[in-house]
Image (cartoon, rainbow, N blue to C red; front, side, top):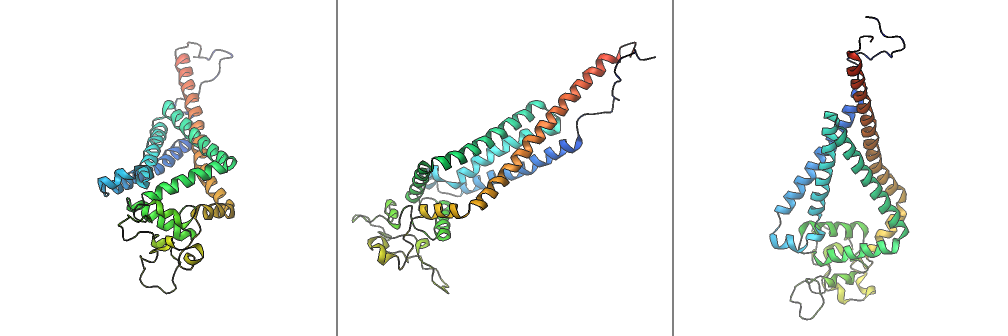
Length: 283
C-alpha cells in the first residue's frame, strides 16, 4: 500500500538508537569498580572481625577499617546502579547513578576549594584527627601501623612535636603512670641507624623528658603536621595529577550515563512512533 504523501518514513524495526559500544562500555566500567568495592568491604570487615571487641569500640572514630567499609558500601551501591541501569537500559537507575556521581564530584571539588581557602581551619581539623589517633595508638593495630608508616615516611614525631605523645596513656609522663613506656615515644620516631639488622623498639625510651636539642640526637623532634604541609606544597603537581586521575573516571561515568539515557529516550520515542503508524492505512 502506498505511503501517504508527506508522511515521514519509519525506521526499520531492527534499528536502535542505543549504541552497544556506549552501553557495554558503561557496564564494564561500573563492573570494574563494583568488584573493587566488594574487595574493599571484604577487607574492611575482615580487619574489624580480627580485632578485640574492646579495642575496636574504643577507637571506632579513627579506625581505617571503618573508613574502608563505608567507602566500599557507597561505591558498591553507586556502581550497582550503573551496572544494572546500563545492562537493563533503565533510565531511573542511570539517572540515579549520574546524579550521585555528580554530587560526589562536586563535594570533592568543594572540599578541595574550601581546604585551600580555609587552610587554617583545615590545619586545625587535621591536628584534631592526628591527636585523636595518638590517643588510640595502642588500641588499634591498623591505626598503629598507619601512624608508624607516616612518622617514618615524613621523618616526624607527633602532631606538633614529639611531646604530643604524652596524650597517650602509655606514653604519658605523669608520675603515676605505671607503663614501661612512660615518657617515651614510638620507635618510628627514632632516627634511622645505618646497617641495623634488628629494629630497636625501645629506642624512644624517656625521650619526652629530654630537651629538644638532646632529643634531636636520637629522634625526630618536628611534628608531622608541618612536615605534611611542606610535603603538600612541594608536591602540588603530583597531588593535582592524583586529583585529575580521580576526576576523569567520574566525568567519564557521568558523560556515558547521560549519553545512554538520551539514546534510550530516543529509542522509546521511535517505538511509540512506529506503534502509532503501524496501523495507519496510508503509511
